[in-house]
Length: 527
Image 1 (tube, one colour):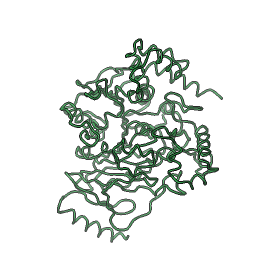
Image 2 (cartoon, one colour):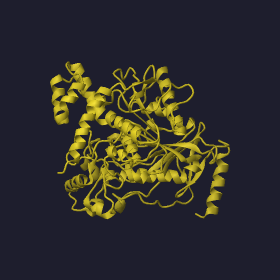
Image 3 (cartoon, helix red, strand yellow):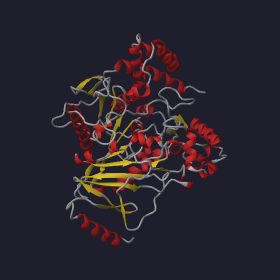
Image 4 (cartoon, one colour):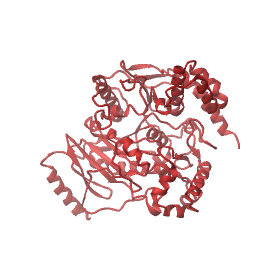
């Protein structure tokens, strides 16, 4: 399409939109062509915008490639397919059932009246253990955050074997390693934001990335990746950070990221299970066969890789060397994160001790001493909180301390402990998401939220949007949130009396710190 034709299309479409929403952005010219959104209640949503070519056929297990432009105006009124994963995850997420390898699409919600507003941009990265996830979950609807004065973007990325398979052939093919295609998707999406978000009234010079769980891990990885430098200016991580050393062998507690050599060996074993003799044969397989070979749910065994290109290695050490993307960060965890990972109604003290000794080796005694477990009730609470610290709270705490020590920008840390009748023991993993997005009443939400729930949602949205605007979450009417100091160890505790306080689980974090220091010493030893 010629530029003059595009301008005519834009003018025509703009005239159509002038009747229902006189001064609302209704169309935008982006990489590939013109897209038309849907305007409602002061926000225009653009769903299913492609940002890269479909990663299918010969493009499976390659970095995202440029898309093919389209003719005319592309109606952006429906989410693209979710990336390949277990079909059961769609029902769990409340997303449409369509899954496909053709999944590199993003979505934009904008309140802008024109393209000159230059509003702050927030880019959401979904979680799901790097095995699942979808931008189409009702929990992630961007309308309410957009109504707070930001442009909201959500980016899809490949998961499981499709996003994180490493293999010697793939490393040789790229010349830069393999196993991080999902992260490369996110980087390509951020490049799209840089190049196109101004058309939606967003400011490409004020971009905040934020994500939860694996999405939070991805945020921390992008914060340490040279390939993401300059693509974002602030970062928010909810329950996720990659600060353990890369593993040089089998999975260990809190250590999911492998070295390239280990990930390549695991990739070779996966191809053997597929019955594929090489990458060409694996690329010829139907996507469903690859998905089936991964296993059900979140148990795919695939994770980002320390490939030396996208991810240079241990973020803990990279920060000490000053090798990271230094921006303001806002990070935190939930009080009952581990409940999702400990489903037993009862845990005996003996069972807890056996679990800890199996997981923590030489550092088991320090862990046991930090977690009271003399009764079944205490043992169950301890089992949950060990998972909280090992998977989420310690990496987040380590990130906060390293950033405070070696960064020039502030870090703000939170502890989310908002309790409901459904969660009387504390906030579970991912509970904060609907409060952040203002989607408590959407499908799969709380049902009829209490006034305290609505107030907590307004509080979180206020802090998150303030941070996206200025790099400081504080603002009128909000309890003061001091920047984190590694010496003072104060965080903002979200509960019935939200305020800044000492870290509630500091003793447990310090015990877990001994464990990860030991793991780091082991990883540094020659084989």
